[in-house]
Every structure is written in structure tokens, then in C-alpha cells.
Length: 563
Image (cartoon, rainbow, N blue to C red; front, top):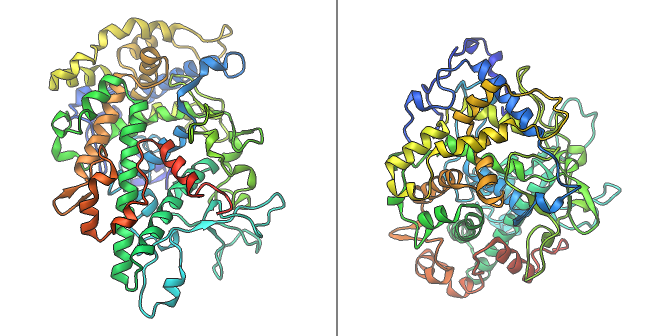
């Protein structure tokens, strides 16, 4: 249903004439309780505000593309391109909504965040092998069992060669399947792999995110194999025990990487120290503890949209030269099953995207975080306008999503955070000091011809006084840290959301909680209580960064396409 235009449903044709903060957020929340007067665009005509967002999107699109003339000013050595797709994977693990608020113009009919357990790798595990069996391998143990035996390993699939054959090709893709003995009209009897065998269909939206997903599938399979080797399951309860233990171990490694690596690179240093050092302390949260089971719309429809600015037009995927990223976008079992499984050219060589095992800087670095997007992100082919009032591209979609997402006004959110948590005021500056610089940026054309839709003086004043959150997060990153990491407000929103999810949904067994700030071997006791043998735990990696995990996987042959 994602992208369905709900204005086609007669019962909800009549929308509000003015934006307001009323209504259920559909399993989500605001970062802080939101007074109606503090909402972005409160009391304004939606169509007029939408027109203003289109003009701002045009201004963003006039920023010069530095990738050819001055690539060193565009690339971000702090965030290699692998983090672009790791962050997308994390977003899938935080939020899973079925309806776009930008398309539905803020109507909540059918809108709900279906993600039940954020930051627990629900995006790959789903509800487990009994709820999402298509994602799990039917093993020899399942076939030989006289009774029911759960599937505990993930499916991986073969790639195809240049002629399209999968014969003798390595298992270097996610699982994909051809439906048999079903009625699929319109494909002319051809056998197409229209079914992606994953728990979250978004994890095969394009080639690079499916390759990122494959890494987690392979790591789980390694862990479960180690556990099964020490305590071979002969009954369903024993198989479930090993499966649950494997998920706990992988989820702990995953959270550790998020805290020690992803957020350390991404967040403003003062914000990182406040929320994560010397430990994760829920008393530092400004959010209402009773609402931590919901993800803030200021995260999902605001600050976390920064990742769209990181997308590059082309990548050196495996050392065979640059490939247009647009080609990765069409490889999807749902949209174009004729292009699946992945061909050899999309088998990722991960040292091109991360620094592995002490290697030099990777070939692919992300774009800096600023209001400046690649031509792919602005593409009308992939991201057409949502309505006649909109322009094409992700920048405009993000602005309209914030507009209908009922998020906080940036200046009022800053004031509220500074008031609610005075310690934040030590590094979160008051908004008024930002207005002159933002006004100057808005006045600039970025290109001398200025042929696209222009901002009028009253438009510039309106945006400078109340900028949309996705735009401000990028502008703040650009002015605070030259686009290498987020600024203070964007960092606070993401830290509040991540800490809130970890506090509300701890990795816990009985009285023991697994702490992502501690090494795995410091937490053996609760794992042993689950039934994990120490010999198996000793084979697990100690990691702080995603690059540590890749280095470990390489040492075990898990990055070898032939495995």
C-alpha cells in the first residue's frame, strides 16, 4: 500500500482546510507532547505550504554538483558509502509503515507503524520461522525430523551470470523464488522470481540494500551453526533455544555497532557524550517514558531523512569500474523480477564500501550531509511528483512528508528542549542566531541562470522563521560540521529515538540485560543461562564497528561469494 493516494477513497475526500496537530499518529508519537500552535505549518493552508515546499525543493536543486569539478568537497571521509545502506537497513528496523503521509496528505486512514520491536533485527527475523517461514531455510534436519522441527537458518540465493543462468553460481544473493502452480496473469507463462524470500520486502528494494541484508543473514547462519555444533538440537525446543540465542547474540553485536560506531560517527560529539557516555542513562531523555514504545515522527519524517543526501550517482561495486546507481534501483523482485537474481556485477566487494582489516580508505565515500542531492535522488523516473503541486525527487517528498507528518516546528522544538532539559542548552543554541545565515543561504541561487522556480522575499522570511525539519537537519549539519556529521538538533532527535528504543526494548533474559556498551565476553552468564556453551561463545567476535564485523566475517570466509 505504500504510496497509495487515499484521496481516491470517497469517505475521506474532504480533508482539513488548515494544518492542525489533532489526530492519532498511528503507532507513532511526537518527540515531546505537541501543542497545536507548535506544529510545523500550524494553521496554514496545506496547498500554500505545499507550494512553498516545492519552491524550497527547487532552491535545493540549484545547489551545484561538485562530484566532477571538486569531488573532495563533496565526499565525506567520515562516512564511507557503506553507511548509506547500513543506515537504510537500520531505518527499516525502526519504522515499517504501509501508507505514505505525503501521498495521503496527512490522513491517518490505514497508517500505522508495524515495527513491534525496534533495534532487535525484526527487519530480518520478522516474527520468526513460524510467522515468516519463507525467509528461513528448510534444512536436512527439518526433512529428517519425524515431528515438527523449526527452520533456524536464513535462506540465501544464487546470483546469475551474464547470460542469466544461475547454474553453479555462488549463493551471493538473498533468496528469491518462482511461484509454482499459482495463477499469475500477465507474465505469459514465464518463470520469474517474483518472490523475495525475506521477512521485510523493503530489504530487497534495490541491489545494494539486498547485499547489506545478506551480510546479516550470513552472520546469523554462522552463529547458529556454531551453536548447533556444540549443542546439536534433536527436538524442536532445543532448536528454538539455539535460534533464540543466535538472535540475541546478533542483536547485541548489532546494537553495539550502532552505539559505538554508527552514532559515534554520525552525531554531534557533545550530543554523543551526553547520551552515551559513560553509559546509556534513560534519565537524560527528554521524551515521556510512557511513550517510548512509539517512534517519533520527528525521527521518521524529519531528522533521519538525512540519509537521502548521502546517495551517490555511481559506485565501484567490486573493482570493475563505476556503475550507475540507477541500475541498482531497478533490481527488485516486486518491480522487475526479470532482472533478478542479482548478476555478478552487483556482488559487493565490501572493502570498497568500508575499511576492512586495516585497508586504506574505501573507494566509495558518501556525499556530505547538506541540502544538496545527487541527480539520482532528484530523479523523476524513480521519484515522481506525488501530486500536481509537487516537484519530482526525494527532497520534495521529504519536505511534504514532514508537512503532513505533524512534526514539531524547529524553533519551538529547540525552545522546548532547552527549557525541559537545561543541560541541553549548554550545546543546543537558541534558534534566533541561525536566522541570518539561513536567510543568506535561501537568497542564493546556487547557479547564475536561476531558471527554476524562485523564492520570493516573503517565502524566504517564512522558511527562515520556520524551516521544515528534514531540510534544517541537513542545513545544520552543513553549517556545524561541514556536512561530515549531523548538527546538534538532528543529533538530539536521533539519540532520543535510539536510546528510547533500547530502553523500552532491552535485550533481556530474566533479570539480566545485555549492554551494548560492554564486550560480549563480559556478558557470558546470561547467555549460559539460556543454554549457550562457553566454547560456542568463545567463537563469537568482539566488535565495536561494522568494519570489525566485516573483518571477522572475512576471516571466516563469510564474505567469499563462493561460500
